[in-house]
Amino acid sequence: MVNNILSMYITLMSPILAGILNMVWCKSKILKGLAIPLDGNKKFIDGKRIFGDNKTWKGLIGYIVFNIFTACLWGLICSVSKIEQYNFLYVNHDNTFTYNIMLGILLGLAYALCELPNSFIKRRLNILPGKTTEGKKKIFFIILDQADSVIGCVLVVNCFYKITLLMNLCYITLGTLTHILINIMLYFMKLRKNMF
Image (cartoon, rainbow, N blue to C red; front, top):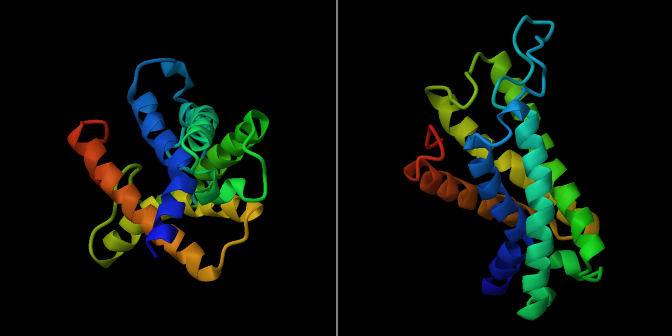
């Protein structure tokens, strides 16, 4: 069990680090002009925004760039520290610079794109961007807000190393809990407006 948890963190460490870096990037004033909504302020047929203001080109580009950077850096760390055998992304593929760039692109896209359906649903329910709802739906959306990007990353892992259904569920659960803890940390560092 401990080895499985260790392998999960080693395998997903790159997108975890990239997510933190992207949060700092999105809050910074650097290249502020890229903070254009992905939906171009367009509305769906119901008259409501498609994704909202928080899903921007700056965030999408950041997810990809930072995932490339962290995938290459983490690949180097895995190689030097001899922990490659615990990283499922290196079981069937060599830990090369080119491979890590491809992983970074895929992880970045998966991380960002898997957040969009959640944003789309929340706009339909009149939940403001970056907010959660009240009542019974609040817990559901808090969990979904943290799990959506994790699910995307786990899908990428499955493209390169098939893991069992139980391991997929463990990845998603552990990744979601980790995401929640990181968001709490970022909130206290004033890098997030809301804890959830």
